[in-house]
Length: 99
Length: 495
Image (tube, rainbow over all chains, first blue to last red; front, side, top):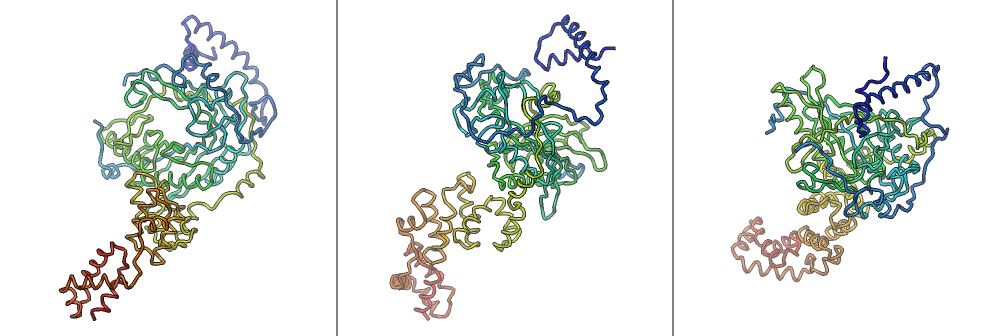
């Protein structure tokens, strides 16, 4: 029995804005299934009473003082975008649906 | 056409349940996770850095002042402060965030389980707070090509990331049942109380009209005894009045749908200030699938109890307690105090009294003449071009008998048009009560000569007839006489 369905892979691809062909869907579903299957081995470890970790480094309370630092020059900021206008990033129409 | 029930018909058949999410921009000097300035009004994309843009290798670090401000808000809302808390990534694709995620908090908010009590019509309502968490604001999007800058019909959009990354606190209530027909007023009272509490902490200017405080208002209806209904969420409501109106509108709209046997769609809606209506918002496709995960680039926070207590010790007197204390000190009735609060005049009156005015004088000017001027100009009271110290000075001149109320209003004209302080305006415009008795006696003699009938009546004992002569004297002195003094002189001369 597979851990992840073809539909779930299609859903994830859509969320990640990835264009995936039918053939790729089949291939990725199979590959991801194998990955998840091997990850299941971790599920067998007894983690009773162990705090779930999200960080590789055991640091807590790392804060910054509220003092302004220079920002980037605007040209450098806008250079990273494919299209700009009036000092702003220009993006295509956001809504697909008709009014 | 949207069908609407009357509010009374809706309330006869249904019970509302409220829920309010409020976003408050903190007024820190720098952004949440980087040192970019937060000063408002800078040229687009000039307060942006690799962290704001999530460029490869950029490393965010949390702003301590923002964390402290959030803990203070939590404490002021009677929340418990987490001993272990972390940030999370909320993943979505939308041009308002260059990172394709918003750094927020998910399962472990900084503050939880609080409450706010509000009084409406003399009845106290407890609004339970589910959580207070810290996140970052998004960029500003300018929609081009559609009508009036709306996203609908736009052909493209222009994005400014100066606001992206400014610390944002989200305060979420638990569902609020049991308010009945008072739901709109309770929603408004909650938003007002929250605003006052946060303002008293000095961590945000909480100006709804400028967007530094914005409410998302959830409303559902159910028939008495039945389960809660499907809710709608009206987004970004940006005035106290609009909070109240949006709840009222949704109750009228939803009840008409339910009466017709239709279902309420769970959706986000927009509120329109001009019409007082709500309309369906954009449907964020797959929006609920944010695939939150713990933010790996930011360290876990473990606020020590000592730190929390240190912050608790800095909390000011709660606004509600403060209002009760001031109401007693100023000897105001409940209704009058409510007017002061509604006019946002508490601080102004307090400052006026501190500058030497009597309480009654301060209340009179701010609630009366100055409120009227603010309404006429369509500005908030504190935006008027007159300082509390100037109002105190004005009242002092009235107390000394140098101005009467009519002259004082003309002095206000001068102060508001930038002619200087009250004494300066009075001197420059020649506004001063005539206290020269000789001049007044001459004016009275003239008035008697010009109104022999009235004079005869007074000689005959009809003191009420003095009104006509007083009027004549006031006219000839251009309102600069004290009416009481004039009356005394008239009666002395004619009886």
